[in-house]
Length: 287
Ligand code: OGA
Ligand code: MN
Image (cartoon, rainbow, N blue to C red; front, side, top):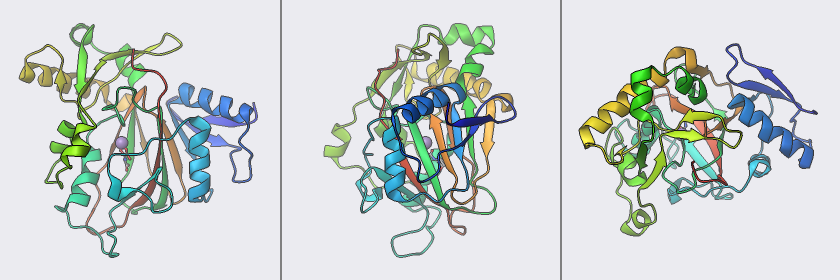
């Protein structure tokens, strides 16, 4: 091992040491990063300034990079980087109700990234350029632990069921009005179905869900949504959660196969929060 993973207190998440800017990304490092991600779920690299080029390079260490469905949010020089910012192109901070703010506030629901794809992503990397000094934390929930400790009645409820994930549905249910997607873009993202209990390569199982899902396949719409809500509440109890308090230049990498996350509210129309995001494509369908 050439990298060191220093576990966070509750054995969910770890800080990485040894991944400094000049470090060449070779096969050994790629193997260690993949193993570290699978083991810890959330990885933090702190105190290193990371250029957009290096961010893309670090992302590629985990796999192919996704291009996200929102063309106007892509970084001008790197389409693989998504600019997650409440600062408008004209330099002003967004209004609470404008589409850019509504889009960002959509991440305040518990979710896992790009589950609307047939093969959802592996992990997301978020790099902090500028962060507010209050609010705007990101919470992560461990879906291995959540499934393990799910009460029996809920466990029975999820067993064998599949959830329908839909980009169009999830976007339309954001807490405000967004600019409509073009019909051509919409047509690219038909709803997909994934098992609620996910079996990973090593045989371990976790919940795979979120507050962003459309409904339970084959179940009455309202009853299904009610069940999703109940399971979500049980799965995101504080003992399964790590809350990240951002510092400038933090890079956080999370495993979307086995964790959920959400943004905590902040004064979105008063405090600047500028993040760069890279999403690493998955390789296996959800089983
Ligand atoms: C995301 C996301 C949360 C945050 O980029 O997918 O959910 O804290 N972000 O910005
Ligand atoms: Mn997200």
